[in-house]
Amino acid sequence: MEKLIVFLAAVWAAGAWASVSEVHEFEPAAGQAAAMYQAATEAKAIQTKLGATVFIGTDLATGNLQYVLTFPDWGAWAAFEPKLQASKDWAAFIKKYDVANPASTQVGMLFIDTPVVAKTLPVATVFSWKILPGKFDAFMAIAQKAVAIHNALGASAGINIDDVGNVHYELTFDSWASWAKFNAALQKSAEWAALLKEANATPTGELMRVLRVEEFKAPGTAQ
Image 1 (cartoon, rainbow, N blue to C red):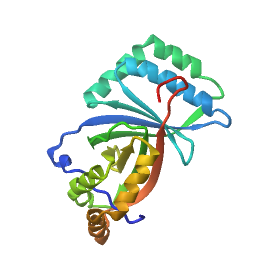
Image 2: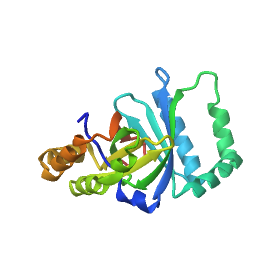
Image 3: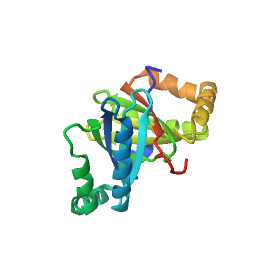
């Protein structure tokens, strides 16, 4: 697994991004996880009305909150910020949560382009890769094969490239049961075994982090 190389999709060559996102990671203060998620839920309600698509997820390893705003392109992202700053609801939200002892601390932020968009589903695994020097094109070369294999086996695959050139390969599922079924099928896949052999023969990236994220649903919302 530590040598697994997942490749970018061939659509990179066309230069057409499917969407862009702003990703924030928050660590809850001791005993403040519920307050953190309440704040995120309120923020989502405001920002969705202003044109963002918002995903709230929980990193199951750390308990950190993953707050993702997605837009169709960078133009839409740029247009969102003035609307946010002009929003009375957002000003009230900032005033409400601008306290001396916040419920959470922001521990990470990324801007990402997404040439291959995974479906927004309740369960996701994300593999974050640092590309080796001079290997970006090689990393992309067999992306289409990887995405095709994973999609055929029941996942929805997505490719995300952040603002420092790291690649975050995403697989989403409708449940953890579906994730487990996918992994069992992956282990039996001759195509995947062949791709791994090809990838491991000449490594092009280093795995930095694996996130297992579950979508957060506020109490009283549809599951």
